[in-house]
Length: 147
Image (cartoon, rainbow, N blue to C red; front, top):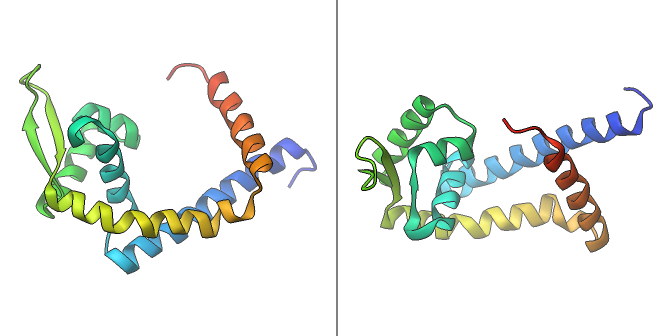
C-alpha cells in the first residue's frame, strides 16, 4: 500500500466497513434469522411517515435498480414483513408498507444491531474522534457531484 495517508485512509475505511458489516450481518442472522439487508429495509420504513415508502424511494435508498428492489420486496412480503399497495397519488406507483409483524421483527432486532454497532465500532472511538470522522466524511459527501 502506498505511503500516501489519504490512500491509507481510503483502504482502512473499506476494510472497517466490510469487517463491521459482516459481523453485524452474522449477528442479525444468528440471533433473529434476519438478513441485514432486510433489517435495513425495515429501518427505512420505521423512519418514514406511517411506515410507508414509495418503491422508487426505497430502491434509491438501497442503491438497487427498481426491478431488483421489486424482487427483494417480494421476498420480504412472502415473509410477512411488508406489503405493497398502489400509490394513491399515482396509481402506476407502488408503496411498500411495514406490517405489524415487520414492526415486531424490527423492534426485536434493533437492540441486537445497535449493540453490535457499539461493540464493533463506536466503543473504539472517543467523542472527538467520532466528530472528526463525521466531519471529514460529510465533506466528501458534499463534494460529490450529483448522481
